[in-house]
Length: 383
Ligand code: PMV
Image (tube, rainbow, N blue to C red; front, top):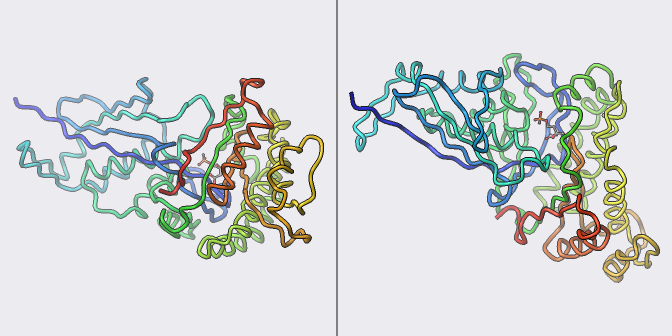
């Protein structure tokens, strides 16, 4: 009997939250306790490429990640596969002479091959790009008619942050109200062209895997942190509104202030959790140094800095002449996820170049093999 294979390949970048998602109100459906906002990276640098294939000759669902076979039996994979299969539509490929009915999709097995174009061992979040790419590729394979927001609600069930990778530019994950999670999905705030002068630099501070998974960490925080309750109810709703405005107006000062404050509050929630979570602990020396570097630069009053930060004074002299802290010109925002790597967002290419010089001065690669600066291109991340 004549056999055939139908294949689709998709590519999806990862995203970095500037207003963090931390805490689930429903662990199975992955429903968050607050809205979040992220920026999607340039696919040329941090992305997943996934090929999905269906054929009557496959006798079971199988998946390979970076060339190594992994199990698809986990609940998160199964939820995504089930949801997409339920939305499969008829496919007719005249060239290959194949016709797959809605009913056929229930019986057909799948093979999935997924690759990350960045070092997996570097501890850079890969599940966001991975699940977004898997869901998108499967939807195309099975001719599902849902739009990207609908697909985001499926990717969410693989990994919460994955729902935001279905769009480029700046993306909001609306927490939703419905118990079945149908309104907990991602929407694009602005596309990738809106603020294309921004440059993102990721400093790989440590290649060690995080000690507390986000699933365990979030569960502990929801159960024990009062700060989390306050953050979700009182703080994030206001920040989401202000961040949306800052992005719309390309107001880098407000954007940087909110991004840094939200990263710091997320790590404060981790500390407020019992037992406390120290995502910034194992490499805190370097992290604190990076934060201090950025804060000093952002708050510089044009006075030369001395000692450790002498490198900064060379660059910020004459650049931030304001004498009021509130009027200072911010050039760089920092944010840290559930791991030690620093994500630095520079206002433009000039600020990014200066930041790289500072980072290389403070952390000379030759004297510290653990810190490699992983630069997300020398062009805008949003192009
Ligand atoms: O989607 P998860 O389970 O990997 O959780 C991501 C949590 C953070 O990266 C810390 C914040 C976020 O909004 O991406």
